[in-house]
Image 1: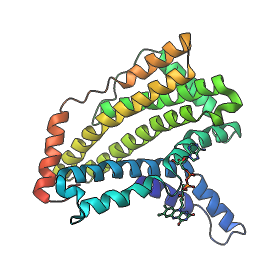
Image 2: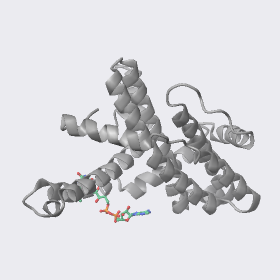
Image 3: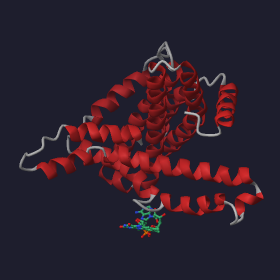
Length: 272
Ligand SMILES: Cc1cc2nc3c(=O)[nH]c(=O)nc-3n(C[C@H](O)[C@H](O)[C@H](O)COP(=O)(O)OP(=O)(O)OC[C@H]3O[C@@H](n4cnc5c(N)ncnc54)[C@H](O)[C@@H]3O)c2cc1C
């Protein structure tokens, strides 16, 4: 959410005050990030649901009774996946808007699809070296999978793509996963650059703890999309491209989770 807010702020800072169409330009500036806003809305409300469900579970029977706050959190959380655009509608908006902008010629989606096809047909590259190299390779592969699947979907459904809700939702889940993992990496890199070594270590543990299940979910969505849009050789090409994203090496996952848990217990709060 902070990342998206920063993007919108940066964009709006470019709109000159006092120009005749200031409010139109301001509105267009916000609309430029409608995809990212939809990603943040869906991701945050889904994560909130997961967190609050865990809160109820951790409280056990007390979590379910009205005398304790967990039950109230549980009820209040539920609306977030319904209002401000239901998560289904927001999901469909993510690839839907991208495809619409591509048809209008606002973004070179087809060119990017062709580049991604080229990368996936070539031998798998080495993971970038340095911190978060594994996560960066995973991101490259997830983004390529998203692009290639979007291209295959347009090829299969043509102008009717906007009505292919199951495929739009599966593509959205790949995009949301990639955006969220990338946001986690960027945040951790920022923390590392600040020079606080113990916080940087915790952030790296958070990236690993998050990237593993997020990648599994994104890959599952990508496979679902592949079976919706592909058949024969195309399907095999799509599946083999997606397989690259399954190679994420989450060694140290258990230690990372325990490090985070220990830090939360010690500080009695969100440790980052
Ligand atoms: C507590 C609360 C506060 C609210 N506050 C405001 C407010 O301040 N301002 C305001 O304007 N509105 C507000 N709303 C309304 C809210 O935005 C709507 O409830 C929401 O947009 C969903 O619309 P709906 O209830 O008509 O459900 P529906 O649109 O009937 O949706 C029902 C279900 O069908 C799914 N669905 C609907 N259409 C499609 C489709 N084409 N494809 C796939 N699935 C679909 C939805 O995702 C949902 O799961 C509020 C609602 C609540 C409960």
